[in-house]
Length: 355
Ligand SMILES: [Ca+2]
Ligand SMILES: [Ca+2]
Ligand SMILES: [Ca+2]
Ligand SMILES: [Ca+2]
Image (cartoon, rainbow, N blue to C red):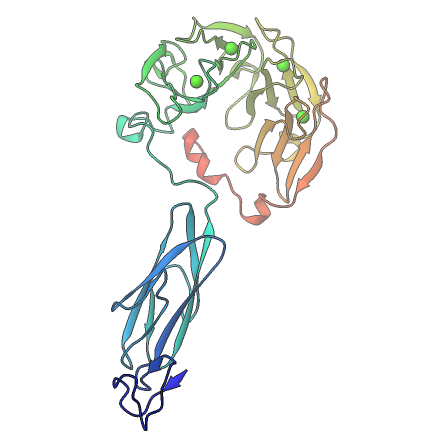
């Protein structure tokens, strides 16, 4: 940098006719330099003004001026923090006791900013987690997942139009709290049990599992598809996970229950669920898999069309692959997302109004 001791504002004629082409700084005015790093984008501005970086990424300030830098991310990016004279992600406050350098790092965002798609189905409308189940699924086979809420007096749907959810309308007068379907005692979910592309309602009830098929504009009347997996057979919400998934790749979602001594399955034949049979001797309560500590679910992790078992355990995530007639041996697929890394489900305990 150039230091001009003689008439710094005097233009081209400085000193004894020397022509200075470099930038002129006052030794009493330390410079603040901002750099940007990362593959995202954004701008840094200063108060007092002088930096708009952007293009203007340095400024001299009177000694001891306190300068506040603000990072503003561009759309599609996020600000991940300061380095150099500042740290963290808040405002960067620099006291100009000398030359200072600060780097702002911007990274691409992994998700777009959330936008409100509906003003319904929310807590302000009484949808409490302890009383009502809300989930998503494609109930009209247009490829877009819709909102489904099991409410006080029926099941409500808001169809997705791809950029928002439409009006809420009642698609069923069953499976609701007024008919005794409490969150504490009964599991309700959605899945396509008859392979018509439309997700249907499934409820694990007092004396069996009930289904209401979607016809694309409403859910048909409720009917019993299984006399197993129910509360009368000891399947409590507080102890056992039950869900649906297509474990044999016939396009029809089946029942899966993580039980006392293994994982049980009842295959859908399109009009009912078959007899219950044990597909795995792992992932069960007798092996320490408690609902209060460990998440277990199903999903097709190897892209063979058959949903597999996934359990978020004590020291990693475990998988048992479906071979179409049973689940194979359990093996660890990840050493993350587990209880030893602090992933607790304790916050869910309140859902059941117990514990
Ligand atoms: Ca849909
Ligand atoms: Ca269906
Ligand atoms: Ca199936
Ligand atoms: Ca699979």
